[in-house]
Length: 395
Image (cartoon, rainbow, N blue to C red; front, side):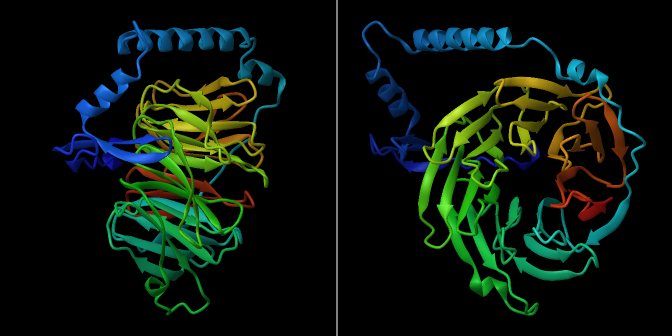
């Protein structure tokens, strides 16, 4: 998403030639090094076998990709909407705004539900992180961050802490207490440190570990208590904009999407990229696992949402219409998995029948682009955040 992408060019001494030049942050055996573009090219050429050139390796890589696509195509025997033809169509769909949360002074960029199904945390371009009571619309806590553009926030599974970060390149964790007048900033713990902006964060199934993604092209798993890096994930060739953890309690995989148009599935234990999907035509702004964990959806600046089946290892559905020309900034599934909610840059939220591939509703109300959409843990409502500075609860 170009409006939220910030490029930090590092300038300094190259680790190889020691000259002061613009540097590329690259990783060798999980160790970060800063090389200038000339040294990166020389290093790549030194590793070439006799008779090999970078162009021949590129050609070989492309032919292997083509063969892989051929093998995937052999398994492509039927479309999802054909399988769903005999299923009953969804009935009348009515959803309205039930609450409007006002308090941010600028664009709402991210939000997350607490597992108690009542509280919400939101972050904004105004540099504030607010914890809300979604029933009463009251603000329970507010934290002012040291930077604007707080692009990521997440509730801890216990409901006793929130994590957030953005242009400060850090992920900070704030413990929450019952005393609403307490100064949360004094209890701040800096957990993660990236070399570029933090785009997304998510606790694993405990309060003790947190996953982050960043504009430096990496994802990382951190220990909350010590701030130690437990695992780093390298495979994206541009900014990583979004991630989502597999829903099972023992889930050891997560999916990420970014500006390289790729959606990658990762093994958290090994750090390996186990599956990769490249069918979008622009940045992937949002990814979300299907409730069963066997598939995931993505939303992109190419104005489409797509469904990928992990067992079939391929894309199985595209949710698009000619009239939808603005990018999808955020996606989430209903609790049953039958509906897909997609927030768009044209101020609307599209609701799709996942199986039949048809749009069942368009929700109007926001006065600027919808930046985030999240279904509540019990599935009875969902919340949307927007660049109009508000959040809305729909049911």
